[in-house]
Image (cartoon, rainbow, N blue to C red):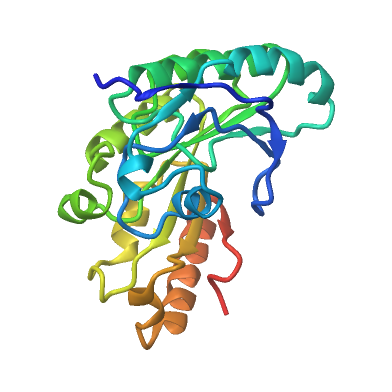
Length: 256
């Protein structure tokens, strides 16, 4: 296991997100050790506003030490407005090999659930089996843009392996929990040649699939047929989900 770089304090934790499929969110870590090489919106924003100085700085996560105290103050005031709390939009709640982060995430989810607040989780790490003992309303997801481990090592070098990510998700599915997959940012063929149907078949057990294009990338925007490519892929996702009774969401700007 790895240790966080340190601890920080914040004045607030829960806030309304502007993401189209989100409601409220919390980000109880500054930075992310997964080291994703495709353009990371969270890193770009944190650097823009001076919260991190470099990519290397971003890879050293700082845990918000007063997370649970903030939740104790904010949940009673906000719980009647919240449909769900997303963990997380600018970090990873189950950061691979960071036990301190995982324990804090579990404690936060328990606290929210105990007050009747549903949580939605997304990770490139490993979803712990302890989640199966929490609220049945929760939704547990992983990011999966390829099943090619060589591509994963290149683009998500410090994240959990694809095999282990899927296995942890399947455990929660088999326990009767709501599971989902974010197929975003999906790469164009100039980055990797792959068949999206192979990916979809590997996650055919989930309850929901979200699909989205890669943004902020010169390689993708420079791919001549990127609009037609994403239109075709989105149609494949919709057709697959309709055939298998899976809910889906196509991110804004993916289809044109």
